[in-house]
Image 1 (cartoon, one colour):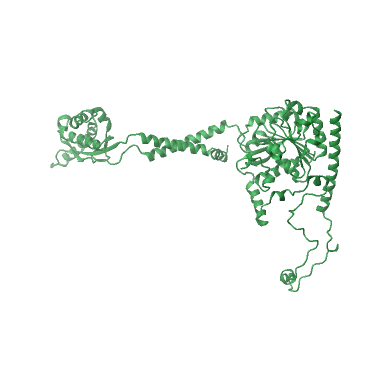
Image 2 (image 1 turned 30 degrees about the vertical axis):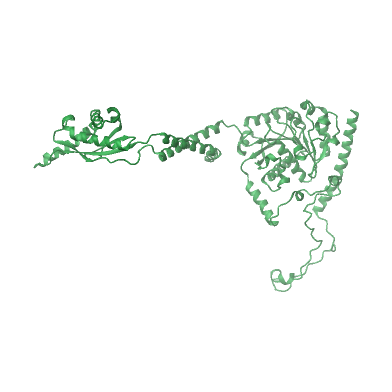
Length: 564
């Protein structure tokens, strides 16, 4: 793993780490609040020669050396149990001598003959009383009880004062220590969960697990995903719509050697977004002018009617059971060039209907009359419907949801298709939380175009011009290449009256008048033929041929249904 992998793990689990830090810090603060405050009173005792009136320097040096040796012994005597008994008896303290001895600490100050005596107690007054009584009793009784009386003596150098602030607990310090401990625990838990987590979270995970199957689209998480949104219809400039265009383009690359006219969209489990991808892919294909049929084969949980309406119309189950003809099941959607066949009523035997010869004939017939047929199937692992239909397709798109689909489940679907000799075109990652793979630049590019158009956002009617669908099918009109409010360009360009004066210096270095425009040889009002106009003519002819083929095919299927 590289450094960026560790940083990615930490960033992905940042809320867990923050939670561990907060819990640990709050626990430390709560524990500190429950502890009884302790106050420490400190007194200092000086140890030195009993007398310093000596004439010889050697004697003075000997006494100073002896006093230094006495310091260590006196430090232990000051916290001994016999001295504590004297203090308890004199102060009538409600504690035992052993408890007072445990509360007493002594410390020899470096390079001095001073002993620091400290007593800790919940009461600052008692702490002061105990330590002062202790040092006074020791200085007074050292000769009788503690082996004093020699050339060395002890004296109270500094009596204790009443403490005003507790020495424990320390909430701020405890909170910081708890937060740091929680940080280490959170980081450890994050890496453990990373090793245990088998979900596909981003493009790198999918490419590593699903190789050699490529990733053909990364669809960002949509804030309106639960509202069953068609991205190109709601906002044609959104990152989600651009991701669908990338998916559409990648599928077109696969059709270089062999045309792809039958595409099946499935996922390991429900909730991965296969229906959303299938619908938006069909809309994206139709936006290119191709005739597209969206076929809903999820007969168990149909949802296509929630996108296009008309839930009570005949559907695929009615056609397969012989209760309706194919022409009755095909519905013209509000989107140009896109027709829809919904699932219809839920039958008792969905897998048998989808695996029947009648279904195969329907797929073959419809695929001959449209450019592209997109199938929205049930999840591939719970049921076998996708595996039954996949061998009749030109390719399969496997949809996984970032952070939800497990790697081994996606691999099981891919291996299952491989056993049936099914071509998996690629994986579409749905619900990516961050706009990766240049999503920012796509959004920036479209925002720049919107600003160039005056900041006006396109309406739905401008994204998909409203014409009667029958007129579109028979070729009377075509979807407008520009909004209806925009006026067409004139046949010939008219020169402005002040054009030579304004552009004399720029277009004519000599400073004379600029040459006038030459008239169009074809004459005013006559437009020359262009490749774009020729392409439109070819499209009109293709639509007319498609109309005739669709009518004849539907008539053949209707006759076949009647004969059956």
